[in-house]
Image (cartoon, rainbow, N blue to C red; front, side, top):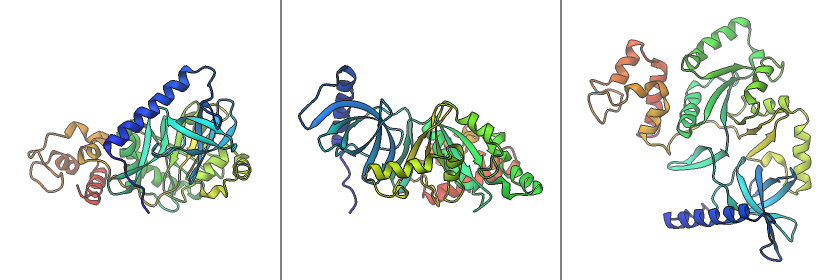
Length: 333
């Protein structure tokens, strides 16, 4: 059964209630108890999402199993929350503090599911195996641009390539470097590129995103080789079941910052965004927008389309232009 969607009035009321709870927790230096069963208000950060349960890390870096108060909406890794200890030794999250940033992915047409909150950068992980999906990279870049989050392209599994094959792969990725995106070539197996990766992650909150099988989890294991055992122990200790059911997981890094491992996807649609935002998400196209002959130009076949003309002349990437058309067609815009 699908969840009942809240009305705009209910959403406004929920946000007002959350704001009041956050303000109350901030003003109360003693975190006074609200009732015999509901403990003091505390601040914490969500580090795991196990289906209907969360793991919240408190200000002393202790982990607690928590449920979520109804009508809060989706609570995701990286969320800073207000929570209370219950008499049952579990906790309950009662409010989400304002988010600095939010990465979302579509789940149904018109609907979006938060992936990670309060992040500084998205590492778009790709690899020659299973295959290099440039259209998927473009989709993540568009979502990152719209969210105002810095994007880095991490090409994993380069140990599988010969020198000639690696050069060919770099030729395919060169377009993104020309656009100003950082590109890192890495191997979680051999460690090539690890110093550069650590530097990129240092003191930032990052999320790994990409299709299934590109090596997001193996990258986490390379950075934190002992962490997998700790995840399993945590799940057992908090009675959360197998950690493979986790939709996402936040890890603190040795040199500061944190990294979130998000679930792999086969595709990453952009259905929730209007055409104007998708166009704006291709940052090299922005200067051309509004220059077409027709105001409602689809940028596909109309005469006087400046975007198509510049792509055909080589001033703009023809491949990125075709990627845009494919996205617009699939979202029926």
